[in-house]
Length: 325
Image (cartoon, one colour):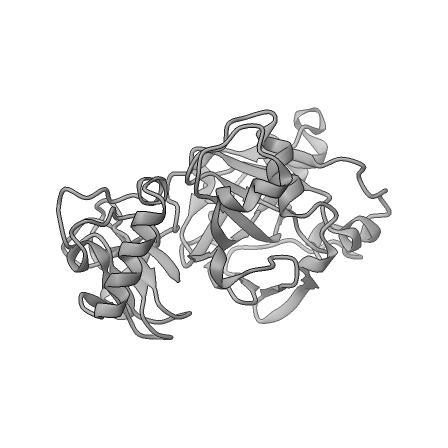
């Protein structure tokens, strides 16, 4: 199931939840389709209304609006995920009914999780990325964070800051937490995972590597520096997240092309490790690291400029496409 958040075009209201129905097709509004269903999975906007949660039925297709059935239902993805299996079951029933589907030209997809409580990132987590910078493979995960202001949608613009001239790309598979947990055992991790989405961990390398004492936070957390989407693909559709091809293109040219097989630390290790430090909650996102091909390690280095278009794609999940402005 492909869960989306959306707004009707022309609206700046809160996103609703829906289901993408078919490639290039509509969105089924799950709130109309199922009055008992909380509205949070895929976020989108449609004209003249607040944002909705929906389910993308197939990549690039229509979206079933989970938020239309009852105004009392929650409209954010975190609330939907917190409702657990009952919400998932209701979404599937609404999909089977096939009503309340909105066409893609009626809506705007937002980040599937517009307001995650935590944006957790992992550095140096691809073997081939370590090799490209002549760095040793880490013996334990390297975690850092981005602030929530970085989150933006799968087709929204990346804002190039005036005070950086080294803005770089990083395609990353992202884990979306679906169930609260602390001190989670590795064998229980997937009980706490809702699904997976695509992120671009946009980075200002001058601020990351040369400013702020070499601490990464400022270089990673400029506004719009974490495009996310297009949907949360539920874990039942990706039984093994460690066999996925992922790639990044800038202006149509492939700059990153690898596989999650290259992950140094896999999903169970990452989730279990970070849960020893913080309680993970529904809607938290964990960016699992980027493969080789980033601009900073090219010879000579290459960085994004205004007008560039960045596409990040992961097999089985989808593609986000963001223009630099």
